[in-house]
Image (tube, rainbow, N blue to C red):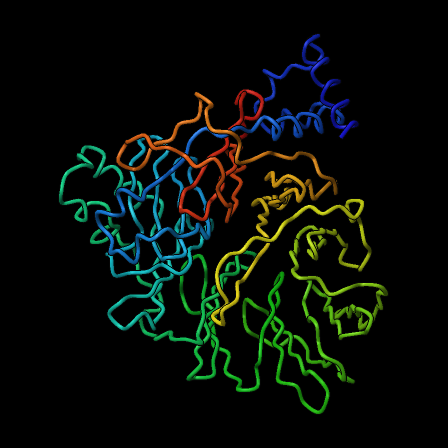
Length: 478
C-alpha cells in the first residue's frame, strides 16, 4: 500500500508540473505512447477515480406490470451493456430489464408477465442479445430461445420515447413483444430438462443438447444455421477451446475414452484415452491442445494432444473454480479466497503473495435446507482485467479488487457501499422518483464496460449501481 501511495504521489507530481499531458490521452493508442511507468500509473489512477454516480431501480415500474412472484426482491444475476447506452440486468426471479442511460426509459426483455428469463448472452458477432426463457404455459419446463438485435431494441425505445411512463396501460409499451420480440431460434426442436444451450464466443458456435435423441447440435453464432449433429450415446460431456471440441465418453474399464473433433466441421481429428483411473477425478479440463487431469491425492497431469507429451505438476491443489484465458495461454484458479495465475505449461506465475482477494457470499439455497455461496468475479471482455468482490473480516468493509491479468498484479481496490450523502450520486427509480438508499447492501454481480470505463454493480435487492470516473477526460477510451 505504501508503494501504491508513493506511485500515486509521483503521478500527481508529474501531473501538477505538466510533465504528463492527461488532456492528450483520449484512447488506448495515446496511452501506449506514454512511458511504461506513466501508463501503469494512469491505468491504476483511472480505476481508483471510480465513484458511484447513478443507481437503476425498476421495482416500482415492475410492480405495475408483473405478478407478485416476479416482484419479490431478487438478486441481480448478470449485468451487461451495449452501444455505450443500454444496460441489461437479469434477476434471479426471471425479470430482465433494459435501461437507456440517455433517456432513463426502461423496458423489459420479458414478452409478458408469464415469461421468466433464465439467461442472456451478448452476441457481439452479429450485434444482438440472445434470450433463453421458460413460460407458464407449459409449467416452465421447455427452454425457449430468441435473438433480439441492437437495432430492434433501439427502435423499441424510440417508440416509447414520447410516451408518458406514468399512464395506466404500461404493459402495452414496456414489454419487448410484437414487432420487437425478435427472432425465434431452434423452433423445430423441443428443449426440456436436462437439455441445455451453451454459447461459444471463441469459435462462434451454439451447442444444444437433446437428451431424448442422445444428440448434440452445433449451430453458427453468426447466422443461427445448423452446422452438424453429433449422435453418440456414450458421450458423457464435452469441452470446447480454440478450433476443437473434446468429447469425453463414459468411463470404460478404468479408462476415459476421448475424441477430439474439428468444431467447425465436426470431423474427427484423433482418438485417445486416459487409463489407470483408480482415484476420484477432481477435474478434467481442456486448455487449447492440452488436457489437464487431476485425481484425488495425485499430481496434476498435463497431456499435450499434438506431440503426445505428458507433464506432471507437483503440489497443484484442485481449485474451487477455474477461469481460462485461451488467447493469453493463462488460467486463473480460485480457492479459499485466494487467486493464482498459471501458464498453460503448468507454471505458477503469481499467487499475489498468498493474499485473500475474493470473498464468497450467499446466493441462494441448495434445496436441502442449506445455502449456496459463490465468489463474485468478472473478467473484462478484453480479458485484461479481473474484478473480484472482497470483504474485510475485521470491519466488514466491502471492496472490489481490480487485477491486471497481463501484468499479474493488483492495480486498484475500490471501496463500495460508501456512506450515502454524496450530492453527485443520483438515486431515481424507473418512474423518475427519488428514493432512499440503505447504507449497506449485499453485492451479487459485477460487469466492467471498457468502452465507457464504467463499473456496474448488481445487488441482492435487484438494484444496479453504476460507478463512473471522476475525470472522464483521463479515462475516455475508443
